[in-house]
Image 1 (tube, rainbow, N blue to C red):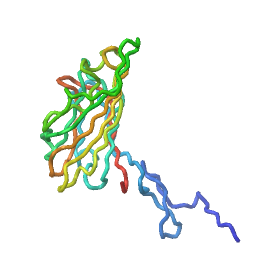
Image 2: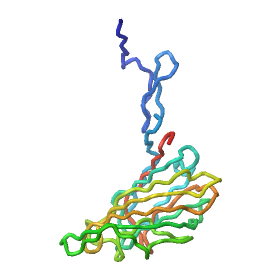
Image 3: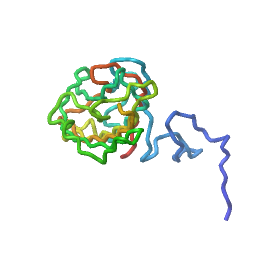
Image 4: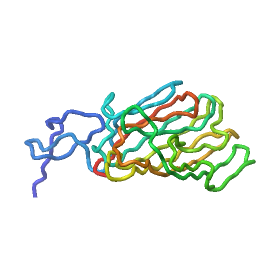
Length: 222
């Protein structure tokens, strides 16, 4: 049986960021596109000492609609100015970030000097019941460590934000340096209680400015 070979120098494909090469019915048989199940980078925002980091569908190349049924938000070295906890919310109109949330939170903690160790603990004090100003994930009751090397990193997954039938479920996990100092591994899950399509989201610190990088990804055919 003959072995067919493709000359990569003759494949008519233009490189596109966050894309892959896939087969088509053309003469050369290849094109760029999203592969099913692949994570596509939509937007990266890096800010220093700002009041919030905001993503709005249709603004500055942001996609946050029915293009993807699952979006992943990565937080990288996000640092509140004076150690407050992080919070977030979404919008249905592009300007008001006050969609009500019901959620639950649990956390595991361990201090650097081994003096404080907490197993997975249900944080009842940080539950939200129809709250319009929810925490993203709790670092601990004292918030982040204020040292120059302290920050928090993690991710949020939000499902089908453009649905006009269902509420909008999300899950987040953030690990940060707590005030001890120590590691706080925080989990929050809940839903934005609206059947209106969400059109954006905002990451901020509680009554403080924030520094850090936020990346938005879409999961193709999820």
